[in-house]
Length: 407
Image (cartoon, helix red, strand yellow):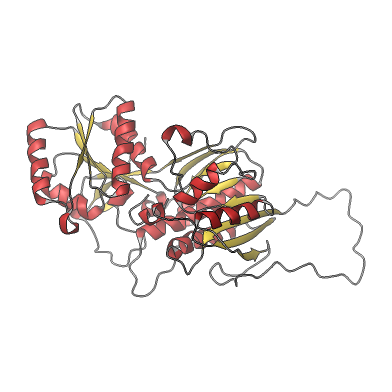
């Protein structure tokens, strides 16, 4: 997000994902592990019977037709292999629980937008539902190609002007995790809770942070709020001390209502130290550097207590029924759980669940997903609609905890 989350900015830099197709066929009855099915293994043809099959019972219920799905991801050996592998593993984890009447192929693609487009076009001729691409540039290319003729669940947000996003192809959903959407959701939250006064939206020159600040500002202004965007420099990969001092002076003089921090967690700690704990601070999921299966229970950020943020249920709600039914991805013995890869694993789970609903010919539905409350509408010939509502949380005792009231 990663489609635009901190390390999901990697996705924003994708130049494209496509190329030669390596098919991973998973017939509905396959029990192969998600990470061990050999590539290029084609679905076996049915064995010939020595005796003729008995005549069909006319009273028996009809057997649902197989739905063919294709998951298009960058190859594991490429620059973005870790991100693709996280999505793949989550997708196959969900598929293993609802595989009846679904035939799945995982198609590994090359690294250019042109190759991705060719792979997408080839898959469109062979499959009923397509899941992918994973990069913003590839999704943009597919969306603008004029060749989306099958239900397509894109795993990132396209790079399109705001007015063009409403004109996506009728058969395309964009379900990628989006820092822009998170920022807009925070603006909606702030409008419910804020005291009167100006809002400072603080970011650095990093692309995802500037996008988050712009999206927050645009939505907040639509809601009648006054927002000023401030950009801090980052010498030596830390927020500028003179810049923080200047911000602190402005806060003392102008008394803003709150700060929207389009920052990561380490930068938010610096910001909090400079401006104090009295001024409310809101932010996106990038303020949460933890996973629910973190290896060190003492790994906390008490410096952020009271800071508000939104994140996906997978990162915040272990008791959520949708979350608890799926296993956590395994990590190496010495590997620290990566929150951005955890979010991509969760995206893979929900991408399959959305695809499964579409496979059941449900054009409009709601899902209690591991990435949020999902509202989907895909009506043939009409505009598609996808909305994700993430979970609002506040840091308590060094960890983000869902708030009692969810707007």
